[in-house]
Length: 121
Image (cartoon, rainbow, N blue to C red; front, side, top):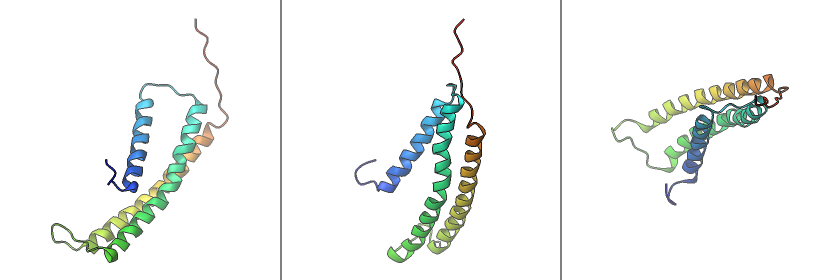
């Protein structure tokens, strides 16, 4: 990416890279409940904020039809593809809200856990 890349694309790339890092850090590392609790706290926030992002992206697509001369490279009607994308974004928003709620439940389930280091033999 360069300075010409829109900030919203850079932000989405940062979010992607953060989740990718979590995936790498949890392949073989063992994390106790207090650590997982904190990670889930941040991830549930993602689930709670993604619906707004999806809704606003759908609205932005709709407004782009009035602001720009939008076309499809295969000649189809861009209004239809925006409507289809909006339907999918609406569904994604609903699912993201469910994701946030499930992550919150997972976090709550381990909220009282602590741990002690196992003494070396």
